[in-house]
Image (tube, rainbow, N blue to C red):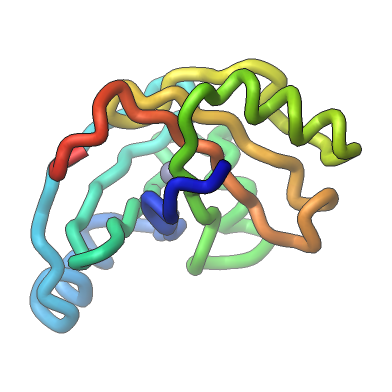
Length: 139
Ligand code: ZN
């Protein structure tokens, strides 16, 4: 079912403050910025060669990412796995007794269909299933 790791989500207090490290020290390439209202986050995607980094900055104190930052501080927030036919993958995963946060896909950054697994079912890792509209090089 796994088509690869699409991106790693990284929670930061401020994208502006985090960017110089990624752009100037790691030399990532800028791919775009977007506000995902449903999750109350601003995201920036960075091209890191064979993978992308998704910087996540909460736009509201009620954002799940704000809660994450309060509890755990800045750092790796989630790993996004590329899948096709996301609803079937969700159903399969649930059949195996793994708890999903999202029982049906919702729209994430770049219009992708996404669904999160519950980290208590995955030994502490927040995995995001991610189905792209089309798997372009920039997508
Ligand atoms: Zn993500």
